[in-house]
Length: 226
Picture 1 (cartoon, rainbow, N blue to C red):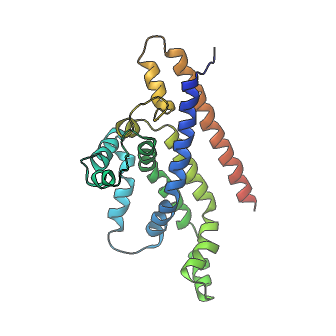
Picture 2 (cartoon, rainbow, N blue to C red; picture 1 turned 90 degrees about the vertical axis):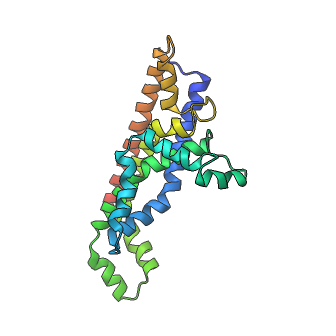
Picture 3 (spheres, rainbow, N blue to C red; picture 1 turned 135 degrees about the vertical axis):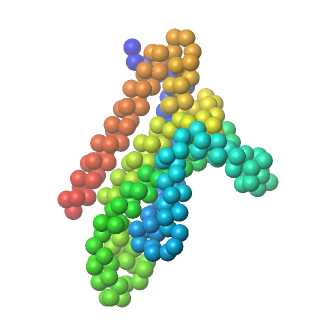
């Protein structure tokens, strides 16, 4: 029978909170990185592209461990944050950072492909007519990349919703604090009699992912008709 406990509902809420926040936080730098990769001819672009895509090929546990070294109390950035009384490890902020790093390459790749498909003559024509860089970005590049931006946000949201490896290393598996759906499923599968609860959360995860994809497809269809 499909049942959810209070802890399960909290895990669902935290998953949605982490995925939504990670996607929104990563969007501005994602657009900036995609713009640079699509239009810049500066040297070192290939190295930057490799660094951005690195989380795609690294095991998520490795990404989480590297983040732990960076943001831990004795880490280079973690020490500075500790001086400001900011704690990242074993907090929801840590889960958001882990999801942001792991999903960032998917966001950038989708937006970059959309920007590269823009007819450069449109941008050149706007520049000829006196439009500055900011005007051409706001009135031409971003609107014509709208479907790609939406696709990237959808992919990143779905990836963040299912993130496990980096999150459990950086944020831990603390019920009510950092325990998202994947972490709750992992906990249920490691205790006797937890299979039924794990299956319930699996069905919830499938349902949420399906809703996100259907909503994205509906918005994408509306954009294509405009």
